[in-house]
Amino acid sequence: MKIVAVTACPTGIAHTYMAADALVKAAPKFNVQIKVETQGAMGVENPLSLHDIAQADKVLIVSDIEIEQAARFEGMNKVTISIEEVLLNVDKVFINHCRN
Image (cartoon, rainbow, N blue to C red):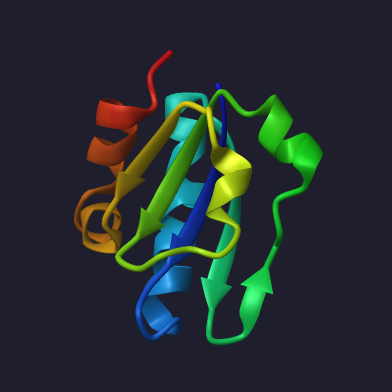
């Protein structure tokens, strides 16, 4: 399964990047290829390309705020979850939301 994700938090500092890191580290355990875009204090980093998005089976929006350019995910299999959910139990996120 291929997943693209966007992480963002209100202050855009620690939790944005902690969630991205947790997703990237956990993905191989669930046979998931993942690319994570962060929208933090430094702006958009590791931006998702149109190709990345087109190839994705699922989109994870991991955020407690509005993300930039949300319209690019219209019509896709998209799940929005809180940053806290990922930080508390990333494995549960994959089990609940990232199955074929």
